[in-house]
Length: 209
Image 1 (cartoon, one colour):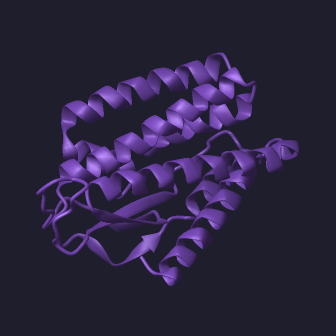
Image 2 (image 1 turned 60 degrees about the horizontal axis):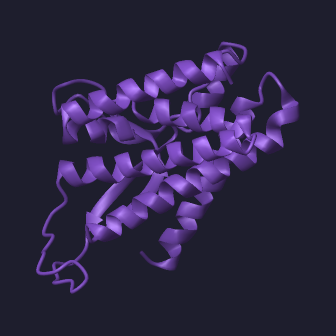
């Protein structure tokens, strides 16, 4: 990735952080700055882990806004261009008066690097990126988000913990380009295990935190 791509990713993260902070603080504006810092950490942790796992698979991981392109099962059932869905969290929180928080806002693309031999990984060549690779990139990122959520809870940052768990739960929904779709296509059993765990965490967050 060149500097221009990194600049775009930074802009995406900042804007996504702002949108979700506004969404999370809709009913309580006093938590806006705490929510903004929380989402910034959540995104940085998630994206950094994806890039590290992507590096292990010798791929470039690029983060962008979640877009909607396919609206049916047939290949020709799609929009002319992908529609950015950054507006959806704000729209849903407005029409539900703050009762429904949609946190699915980012997705990622993976591009295989030029075929090469890496001494670090032995004689292993990546000519293409499989659904298996995509799934594990998403899974490890969400696992690290969970680790940070637990750390936040231990340190007394309950808002950060709650938002982290919400983010994990929404990310596992197998919809369009969200992480959940990538995990599902990489293995139904893997997705079922992580989705069940995320739902249990969500119940804990809703009832205890």
